[in-house]
Image (cartoon, rainbow, N blue to C red):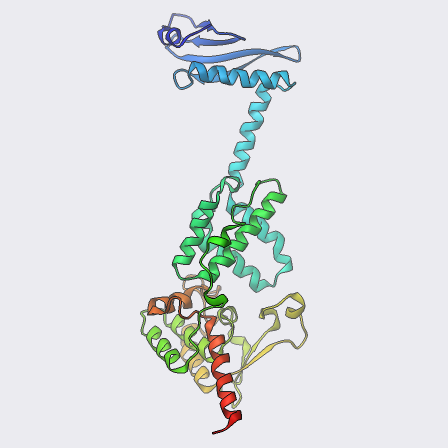
Length: 362
């Protein structure tokens, strides 16, 4: 049997020669000084061989371990060379199955059950917040800390609810991958327990009129895109869902120069299941105050030539980011105090209080 000292002391000769170890393992010494580990075996009546690497990168102990592993496979009726080749191919294929590749397959498979607007929101959120960080990594190698790092970045931007939605979408991708045999576990499954909670079980909202006005004025002083500032004001004046605002199209507005200006939001864009979205005469009607019409008239020179009221800065055919208004509020100092969706709570609270006061009388 060989020893480390014998292997180290082996010198090159004019012709290649072998130094034998036990169980058909040997060291091939080449004229150029290379020391290569080789192993021969018989499979199905044929003489075959395997290469285990070069010394000293592969030590004597390493070479013996590789031989023993291959010999075990041989005893189980497998051809060690074929097993090695299949393992290499499996590793290469696993490397090809990146998170982004699997996520896009999942999205394509699931989009038929969603409304078009929701399907678009889902893939954009992954493209914006997930793919840049872990999209190129093999999905089977992702761990909870890697996924949590993505979610923490979203939280750091003040988007706690968005982080929770993205965790659900990442988890859904892993469920799909597990079913396809691409991944074994879902590292996002239990991360909701360590994400920041939404305050009091609901989204933060300022519900008093005076501080609400002050917040809007402060936010509008920010050096943000005029389109984003107008979006904030229009959201405050209409109290629609932020997603409905972002997807708003110019052809949805009626009678802007008349006595009863109206925003007709198609049922397909409203929150709810497919039955709700396909409901006949289910459009959501939003009467517009003259202040809201003024916002639209100010917005028209900026985006009136396109389809969307509030397009993305980079792609005019796509709506603005779902985080744009939230980031504007955060920069104004209202992180944790008010979110875009909070205008609905503010509208409900203020109008109910006014209604109760009017009912009770002076």
